[in-house]
Every structure is written in C-alpha cells, then in structure tokens.
Image (cartoon, rainbow, N blue to C red; front, side):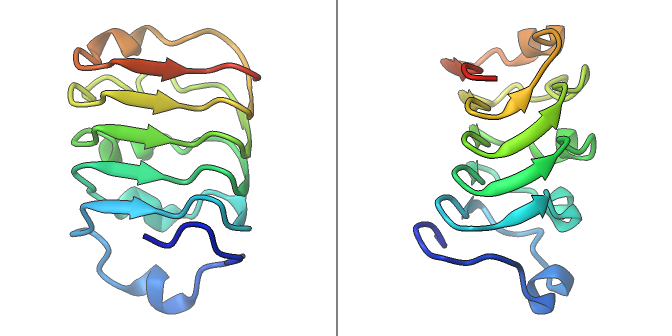
Length: 128
C-alpha cells in the first residue's frame, strides 16, 4: 500500500527488483506521471492493482493482458490514459470482478473480450 502520498516517480531499485510475487499493489492518489512503467507487466498480482488518481498518460500496454489474468480488481481511473482498450486485453481475465477506467481519455469501442470476464460485477468507463 503506497497510496495517498506525493510520490512522483519510481526508483531504480523498484524497477529492477523482483516484483513478480506482489499480491496486491495500491499506488493510487500519488503524482506518478508519464506512461505506465513497463515493470508493471512483470507483476502477477492475484487480487488488486490500483493505479488510479495519478497522472499516467499514454496507452494501456498490451502486455497488461497477462498481468490482469489472476486479478480480481483493476483500477486505472482518473489518469490521462489515451487510445483504446485493447481488443484482447480481457481475453483470459475470468477472475476480474471490478474494472474501472473512468476519468481518462480512452476512445473507441467497448471490447468484446469483456464477455470473458465471467466474474465481473462492476465496470466503469464513464468520462472518457
């Protein structure tokens, strides 16, 4: 839990450390900016990934589709993410119960791969 701080960037030690065993990662309500860091794609959290209320920009990496497979909750709300929700992002995300990408600048169609999220209870895509 690193939420509600004023962190603005990641140190090199985090980028090169073994982050593959983290079960829950909450980086919400900080000042992280720039594109989503690529080390996020190495994560295999089993419960919760919250990157909301930061200043992340750019597109959502396709490599995140492997990261979200075991997740129950993915929260990317209130950033400056752009582009589309990738077509196959949710193909194997059968455990996802919550997806929140509201308050970004995403565009395009709502992806059919969301149908694979058989546990989905909450989907928020407003204000894009």
